[in-house]
Length: 262
Image 1 (tube, one colour):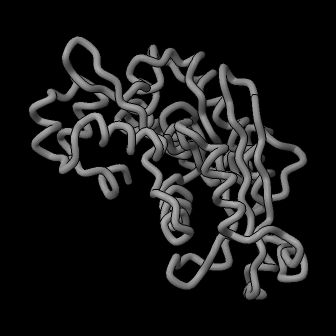
Image 2 (spheres, rainbow, N blue to C red; image 1 turned 30 degrees about the vertical axis):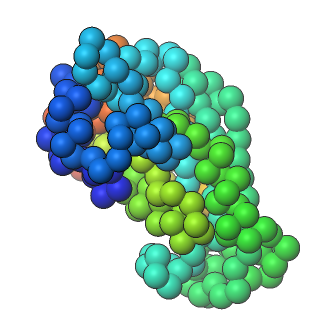
């Protein structure tokens, strides 16, 4: 996701998260001055710092207890950014396992498919007095800041929001991201990893209303805390956690569903 909107190759992106990137390599891959580029990226949620002559993601030096995560969920009236839009968005900012801020809003929408309404409970009437998409996204952009973006199966939410930013005249997201599903696969043994299944199996959110944004955010928050609690690998900083979620071996799943009564 990051490499779509940042003018660096994959190898350089990887070095920003690990051994560091030299100034010469950085200069070869960007058109503007380094200082200007870093300021622009920071405005898009990506903070890069210099340490001992090399450039790194700041998350490389952020202890886990000091890292700021933003757990996000969206509901949309379809899956194609060209034809559909966000109809609800929610997020909580988390630091040291505690929620420190919240964001939640419906979005005004003129057309919502009955199938979407059946799944989410959101119809056009419910959104008629909601703010416009541009208004909501502008406020959410400020709320997100340079937090690490977390969602369950993160690629869809991240890409849809980032593309929606662009459509609204805002810069695309460059925030570091973490997939709560991928993290759960490496820290929790489960037969399935759908959010609704995990919530029921691990008793994460007894008041869950699945496919409503804030409810799914709270469920994901509880899942994130449990994943951190059960993680047996040494995690020293935020970038260690991101790497673990992508590179650690997935845990072996049970052969049979333990929630199915025989």
